[in-house]
Length: 487
Image (cartoon, rainbow, N blue to C red; front, side, top):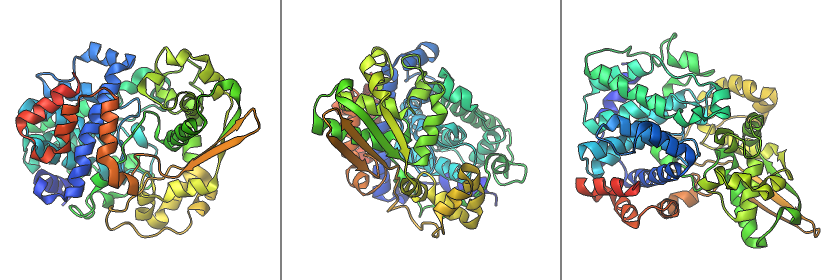
């Protein structure tokens, strides 16, 4: 049996009764969190352009709704991640679009979301040790779209096998220059969602895809992964739930800068109102992951002329904004906020430093890379050397065995922020796991975190109330939840 066959047969038969309550709870939070991301995207000029070009989020054509939702939710980096991948731009949006069109109840919606998460995360994990990571791994959304739609429709396994085979026969290969340097990134999730949905239509019409497209020597993993991990695709189905590795974004911005923004928010609360003239220097100590992402984006950053796609990776701007205002929101990546001279003057005083211990911590936590490294074992050295030379191989050291479950998963992207005031005083804060990233705090508090995120985006309380008890929601309640959320 091929990887696609095994995964399809499991996911097509998944029932919410097969899913632990804690995992279903993560999916409920994921739905509300992604609706918050869609609201934030729709309020931004780029999101408004998506709506002008492709229509409102809820349309009679569910595929078009899914395309618009994916186009609203990804580029501000207000979307949720997991091990492995930025899942929600397909694994939540496609099931929501089809739930709205087909009249699914809460159980049906959640089952589709979880099935899509598990399929998309596993295929993404299999290619994690490769050249495409994070949102640039657009192939995540091929799996998310196919599995999210077909589980919502109750399609048989044979349709899944053919649709996934067709979708992964022609996976997207994004250009990093376009991804960081232009508005094309707005469609980086929407376009693969459309490919995946078209593959479903092709399979329904009788077209067949290659069943071994993932693991074949001339297939997807051979082309996309430096160290392919085909075993990740169907390992411990129904026991290792990738859905419970979800990290919920509580503010926009690239994942590498989350902890630094959290520290800056804490410092703002402690220090009170500041101006750029009050501060001599800000030192952000962080991991190689954050530094490399910032360096790649820096060539495209030019104050208010910066494309949003690069600006969301700009740690100096995000930290400066948070120190001055106390937070970071979607409006901070648009005019008039981008024309605020105070922010750019303070951003020029922000200096980034590398900490090897932080790099090792981020490298070895389950997300975003650690579990893939453990699964690869000695094979991981090839990818580590490609990314950071032999130094990174030595830093990672001996790897422990893969996790038997993800109930204790973490996502560490550490940072320390030190503010040196003109008065001579120095204040600092440090955080390992950002607020909302998977870890003990998020496991305990994610429903409250996500509710606050949704309400802060202007969402109505009625939507949040329905989402809080989504497994018990009727079809009418689900439709009302979705319709109200983006009104």
